[in-house]
Amino acid sequence: MHPLLAADLHQLPALLATAQELSLDYLHSLPERPVALATGEPVLPTLPETGSGGEAALRQFWERFAPELGASAGPRFLGFVTGGSTPAALAADWLVSAIDQNLSNDGYSVVPNIERAALHLLRQLFGLPEAFAGVFVTGATQSNLVGLAVARQWAAAQAGHDVAQQGLYGLPPLPLLSGASHSSIYKVAAVLGLGRDQVQAVGQLPGREAIDPQALETVLRELNGRPAVVVANAGTVNSTDFDDLRALAALKEKYPFWLHVDAAFGGFAAVVPALADRVAGWEQADSITIDAHKWLNVPYDAAMLFTRHQALQADVFKNSAAYLGPLGERPDFVHLTPENSRRFRALPVYLSLLAYGRAGIADIVARNCAQAAVLGELIAASADFQLLAPVRLNVVCFTLAGPAPSTERIKQLLDRVRDSGEAFLTPTRYADTTGMRAAFSNWRTEAADVDRVWRALQAAADPR
Ligand SMILES: *Cc1c(COP(=O)(O)O)cnc(C)c1O
Image 1 (tube, rainbow, N blue to C red):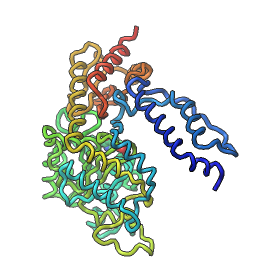
Image 2: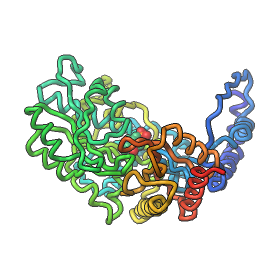
Image 3: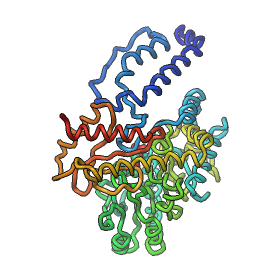
Image 4: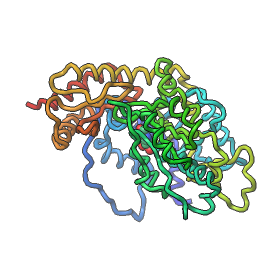
């Protein structure tokens, strides 16, 4: 063994204690550390011939870079939809690296069964029937990719074609119909060879981002029996609107389409009784995407794909090495996702759910929604800002009061907010207007944080 590795092995308790000390430094600083910082130029070091050992490397990294780590895991980072890590999830994630097992195949450890147990807990959390088989992937983009890859397999099978085996050659375009789909759907369409141009906007209900079911029916009717994929949204990123999944699912009686629900964060509505109606009908979907690293507040990266069609999923993702044998009723995870080797990312989810239970998760969701409502009321009543959309869940979508502001003006405003160190929000466009979003999804956010965000916004809108 190299002497530096031997020394580190000998000093492992001290090294891990240092990692704990630095982690706690960071975590304790979350409420006051600058919420976000502009990214500077990268520092590109020279590879040393002789290393400095774990302890020195860790300390040097921390001294050099800790001041430039924003507090995106903290309570006032409202950009994108960004969760944090609950204590149990963080502790579990440390264990994941210590255990360092490859969750691909059964037969040499219990870990695949912990993933199955985590998925079983999640089905209960979300009220999804047992018929939905699940897998963990890295994020909702990858989950959408898996869902639409299975949809593609299904659609081609309607014409007696096996895409996984034969490729897309000679097949007609497959329409991907959606109301206000997430940007990742275009990426997925590109990666899967379906084509970004096939993502087609379906008419929306007046003043809404939700699909107008009648407009969808018209499009489906005109397809004359050709298969399609409907990418339904359970929580759009701007106005957190939900498609009427019951109405969409009812159309499956009359038209052949795959119903994929992108519920990356909106799926958590199912956890709060007062909100659960938003996702009613999703139990009739063919596939469902839900992120864990957003509202479940586990560390990056983790999301789930649930589908009723696991056999089709395995047709797409099976890793057909000769030594693997038939798939059977309970396929190894290596046959279900784009990855072969996989991180044990199920453990933080598993332990979070056992640590906090349904009520603990529901409390995060309900409190974040209440915080968004409070900020929404402040904005609606202010002279500086106006809402662009009603606050339906955990996101406030708004802009400056008065005539529609330029993109540049919003960028300057948001840069001032960021540079105050008090909050971070991301720009957007909604209803042909440039604006911004404040998305609440962190377990640590409290009422006092909403006050601080609001003061930072007012100061940035009215700089003196
Ligand atoms: C965040 C999000 C995604 C993409 O998720 P990643 O985890 O960043 O890959 C997809 N759809 C919706 C609705 C989202 O909010």
